Length: 249
Image (cartoon, rainbow, N blue to C red):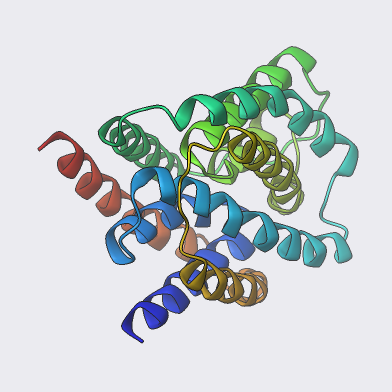
């Protein structure tokens, strides 16, 4: 019963972040699965992709209804990350657990720092295809390697590189997350090394995340300023510090 409650609570938080911020929930899913629910890093990164994919699709539908998804831009951006996501996903299963944990902690800390930086002014300009392709490939690599959707990096990239307004960047990032997660998950499934997953935990975790995503979208519409993002960033910094210490010592 305790495990079920933890899975439901963690799933709700992950969904809240995905729905409200267009990313970031998946970067908490991995440490939650490891430290609260007893998954190994290899199991957690794969389970995270299973959880994030349907949650992102659900949240994407809500943002699409509001017209906040730049479909063509998002598809082009995500396309650059498909092959890197597949390759990185295949490599990740063969790496030591301590390496995966340390790498995840570093990426999580960088994401938290990025979230705490002042928001850039929204612009409307032409897209630089070279920069867009490079950033998209980088996000795909992060997704495949660490089992996260990359939305915490996609949102600022879509604003600064592709000049999308913030609301459209949040919605479009969910499209990018969905495509990258599916690619990475497919790669891991085809190169499975016998990793066993606890579906009795993953199923309620995913269900709670999907419900939380709807609440996150509503909260983002009603909450003024950067309160939700800043709280999330500080929590993420604390989690990253804990994981790095655990990996090193």
